[in-house]
Structure formats: structure tokens, C-alpha cells
Amino acid sequence: MTIRRDAELRLAVRQTGTLLQDIQDFVGSNSNNEARVRFPRGFIRAAGTHRRRLSFVGDATLASNLAYSLMLSDVYRWLILRTDLSGTARDMLIKAALALGGGIVEAILVEYLTGDVGKRRKFKVRTARLVELGVITDDLRTDLDWLWDMRCRQHIFDVPDWEYDFYEIGHYTRAAHTVSALIESLGQAGPLP
Image (cartoon, rainbow, N blue to C red; front, side):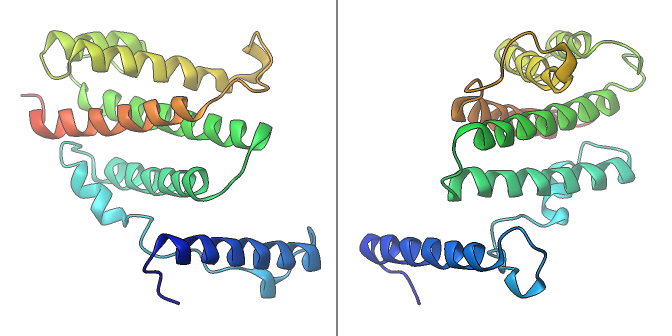
């Protein structure tokens, strides 16, 4: 079925949701290869596409591993944008996306500043250094530091408050824009001399 109008989109979404629920009702939580649904093609960008965005990363292995992590971020993005997942499950999906984004930017910053900032230095020392070098704006530094703080909430034993109803779509959007902005800024700046 080719969708040409909003009314057709609404019908397709309703039918798809009904069929997915029928599959779930029949299979339950049991493993059944017959119940595997084809993930929509065209949303998850190829590793090569991500690697091209990471041209400033000098280590080929790291660039590939970052590309794979960015592919996972595309999966999270699809789940967040294309499903009605809600409540605590959605909160924890957003939390996982924030942790992934924090890990991506950490790896990028460690590699990018190799030779300028030691590997054992703190995250926020790196972001401040990029501002000093004129590679990123102070606003982007603020967002990167915020993302790092959110990523550090992965240490569940150290989270001081209930996470119920804590994470919001705005957190996800800010994190996604922050990762993209860092990649864009470093891509424009190129490698440090």
C-alpha cells in the first residue's frame, strides 16, 4: 500500500498497530521466529554514512565503532518517534539514548584532543579546551556538559532521586542536537594541528 495522504497514513498506522497487537497476543513473550517483524528500511543510516560524518576521527577502528553506535542511536530515534511507547519504558529508552549520546561524545572528545589533553582528564576539561581553541561555542559546551551530567545518571546507585517521570522528549531532542552539533563543529574545524 502506497501512502499518499494523511488519511491513508492514519489508516495504515491503525492497521499496523492492530496487527502488531494481534501478533503479541498470539505469541506473548515466547520466542518465535515466525513473529519477527521486518524493521522498516531507510531509517537507520549505514555505517559508511556515519563514518563520512566522522572524517575528523583519525583512528579508523574508533570511527567504525562510533558509526555503529550512531546506528544504534538511529534505532532509539525510530522507537521514540514512531511508537507510542510511554511511561517508565519510554523514560528508560530516553535514558539509554542519553547514555549512548554521552558515550559517543566522550569517545570523540578523547580522540580529538589526543596530544592536547591527556586521556585521564575530566570530560568538562575537554569541552572547556575546545572553547579555548575556538572549535566549539560556549553554548555547545554547555549542552555537552549537560549531556555528560545526564550520561552520568547511568550509575544507578548514585542517582539521588526517583527516575519515574524524570526523562522527557526534550531531553532526547537536546541530546540528539548536541551530538550532531559536535560532529558538525569538529567536521568543519578538521583535526587539530
